[in-house]
Length: 184
Image 1: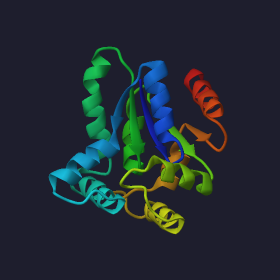
Image 2: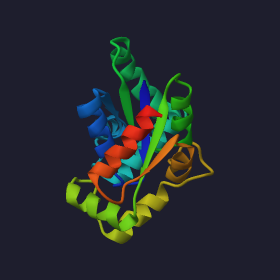
Image 3: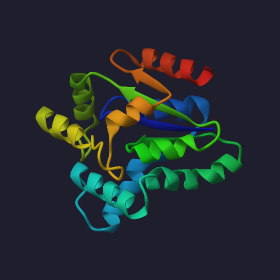
Image 4: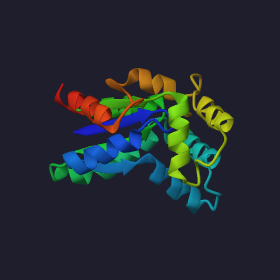
């Protein structure tokens, strides 16, 4: 099985991935890691703007589904071993559509209140996340591009998901939602 994960910034996509890896034996394939490899290879500063530009450029050069296709290509070896994969974070409609071509795949979306997500982002203390709340909202708005399939469109990706988790409360509540989705 391949599960694709999409969702808003700081909603808890990584928490869902961590649960699937630790508790369910999934193997994680990260779009962020793939894109950061490319950012560094190009000698660019690591920033959300540069990761977004590089991701959009990869989709423009190789197709709107490129990032999901590349991560699933990497996941193929572990699937041959009978293991499940989780591919995170899908940001374009093409990526969601690609995951849907894989038999037995599911797409999970994670969302939460913007203030809660911002607090989570600030607590991560990564180089991409030390920004103001206004900048946080602007970055997220920039990832909604309905007219260009090579760019991110988080709102459409979330709407296309098989299941949408609302992560405004506790880890236990989020895990219960994931468990329900896995058994349905």
